[in-house]
Length: 276
Image (cartoon, rainbow, N blue to C red; front, side, top):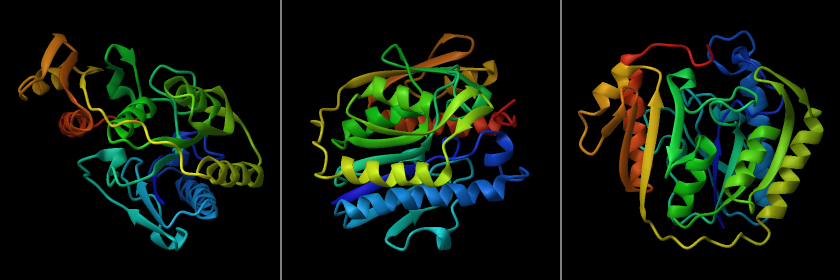
């Protein structure tokens, strides 16, 4: 059984503030340790379920947050950027399931460190007219490959967002949002045991695969900057719906990969911190 872990940081046990998850933040080094411990709990759960191959993608920010030496030796790590498939780099149709560790809710939600990919630079995203964030795009892209998202960990808002997209996703709330930068935390040992147990149960047996039937989809993104939108309309297939909103049609996962290009263009035009 081949398992793929996509690992973000905002939804990791105990973390609530930008200083916990951004390089240079006063508690970032502690955040990296907490991230590794949540990942290793998920790896232990996958091994208990019979996983024979575990691939971990460091999917947060600089994508160099996990120290390789801190990772469970049974897992392989994709580290660094840029990545064509961003948060899903390395995911293929050969994987049996996806586990999303440390995820957060989309921009505008009242969840811990909520945003969509680029902090306040992205105001909103829609997939086929439905508001979506990192969770929904990951689930839809994995489904297009015929791979189910089996488990998601994060705060309670992220967990609710995941089950709204697919109620078969098993979720582990490791904290409960009180505001965007405040949460009631589950005790560390309890949270990590819940991650391990939930992953083991969700993968035993391997979850049923969705039928991979790629179909045309429309991705729409509203940016804070009109400059980003104007620049993106220079790309083939990208059209503007207003001065700050662009859209494109395509098939997942190719459309997800194209969105990664949009973000790299936006990053070249803006230098704003993600949690202003």
